[in-house]
Image 1: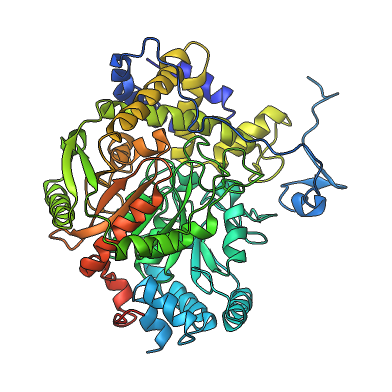
Image 2: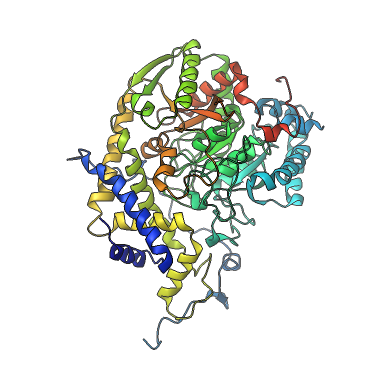
Length: 96
Length: 509
């Protein structure tokens, strides 16, 4: 069963900051849900092919260039931008 | 009272005739629809945003011009509310999340584009549970929507605003999405008709993804004919969605009318899974659903008990599959390209920017589900959770394949209870998840499912009957519902909020 350390680890994997004061609540719900799902292990599944999708086959479109969406319009939704690009914190050449 | 107001309280068919015969214009309807949307908003909170009046009227005028030229399409000139999970170009599309609070859609979802091409008039963006994750509309960042039958109660979810808008007769039609019951359960709670199409029938392009192997857009309407009309408008293959099917789209509207005229309920074999009538089902809901089955029998259907033996596993299977897919789909919200970016971000590290933006931008239920999905997919747990769930999913589909060898439809309650109170179940995720216990399996199997009102409990809250059909047999669902509704018009009674706007228009075409 998931421990508090597990939850920290998962939150890190999922890139979600959980505030200290929320942790007990998240842990309680998370554990209760997982516990309520435990009986799934009773299902007899030996040799059963997993079903990952509801379609048997996918139909891919022809790989031809199309008119892309307008750059300016797309950038309108960016939280921060600079000269037609997304602006992010420095990731190279920083102190660490 | 104007004709438009009377008509909005009547049937879809009546409204369609009135538009085609020029007794009402699309502009009149659109005006009335927007007026109602504004008038009901304080009580119902059914919308996250309304379309700009000038644009709505322009689109309605264009529809009127097409009608005048003699053009005909089942949704031409009809006001429609679109779940705010579906992109509508130039309009805000929020998924009811702080994450997308200010996101303006740079393009139309295929379903939005198709509605517009068919001449439907989008009047606003309907409220929902955040990222469609919920069964009561209470996880919306913009506050819960409320039920037009009793505004102290939830409209269901996640397409709660879409259901409330139709039940209040703000618009005759709306679009919802259904990942585990998000069209059918709110349709049931709000006393309307809602259809989740076969997986692949409708393109998902431009619809904010929750769980890609389960999500499907579908119509919600006062009645089955409206659902047929809307489904016809939005269905069909799409080069932008590799999971959309290119099989031909039936004339759902005409075919549904034909099914009704030919009284094709006669001879249908309707299976009732015994696993859907057990513990947890409210006895009053059970009784009303049984009456509906008796009514179907009186119309010539053969009702038989069947078994779907893996039903008890559907809930964990669904939540493991849905959260796993969601954890991957929602990875795109990074605080960089679009969406919320944390402001008090001081460490200067990119990692922290992601984690803070996502921690702030996502609400509690969304965070919880991302964590569950990340866990189910993570090294060491994948086999026991995600893979195991996907194997049982195959068995659930197999149950349906077997059942449909001996029956044409499967019937059950849509939800174990009628609408519950706002504020209830919000701290007990498992109790909340049970509201979808009868609807989840259709998504897991990719089957079409419909919910229609079949009566009211002692509190005068609507009770829904769910019908499921074999893959691609939506017409059978819509036709059965249409014939039932023609014979039992009391199931189409408008809600008290709708009746505040006036009486019901009588008569057909």
